[in-house]
Image (spheres, rainbow, N blue to C red):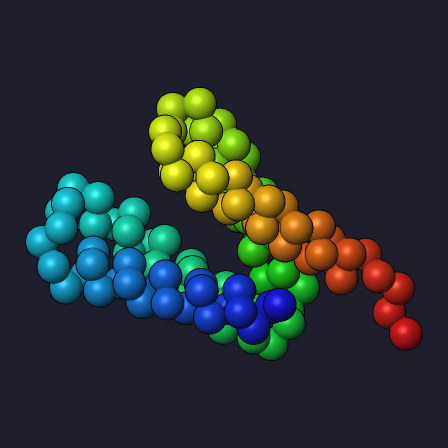
Amino acid sequence: MFRAAALVLLLLGLSWLWTFGLTAYHPEQRPYGLAAGVLALVTGVFLLRRATFAIVISALVAIVVAIGAVLFIPLASGPGILFLVGLAVVLAAYAVLAARVLFAPRG
């Protein structure tokens, strides 16, 4: 589960670094895009190592995105609604499973 999340974060981070660092896409947003790309890459690398802080960061980001997907549902139409519901369910399940790993007794 964490390897898949790490792969998503690594790809997203590389995409943001490419988009904001090497193209002229929204130059006024460049510092934020580069910072988000670096944060995604660092989180992805540490998530591969199953570092506790990376699991916490990825779970919090999953919760924020799931809440955002749920709040956007009334504005969506057609198959976009199903996509947003699926996204919210998958990310909420990831956050719950990550919390389960975090709060499991170590032994």
